[in-house]
Image (tube, rainbow, N blue to C red):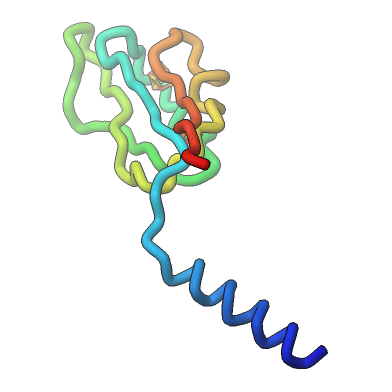
Length: 94
Ligand code: SF4
Ligand code: SF4
């Protein structure tokens, strides 16, 4: 029993140390954005920040600050009132 437990911990440690690959990807249409910031506020993983730059309409738009954290959950897309952003899961290789 004790041996099984030790093996389990060892396996978890190994996966925790492995390089992380993002499970999702986020796509941003900067020129459609009206700068409300909902996507930044509601992303549960802190992937997005508002840019200091402006689009052609004069609004700040979101940028990806931590691409490696994106899960592809699409919460950003669900909250965006202007259909300017969406997330998608990456296909997993079996
Ligand atoms: S939710 Fe949509 S409109 Fe609002 S800042 Fe994000 S991308 Fe722009
Ligand atoms: S898809 Fe999900 S995790 Fe990725 S940026 Fe949008 S809300 Fe954040």
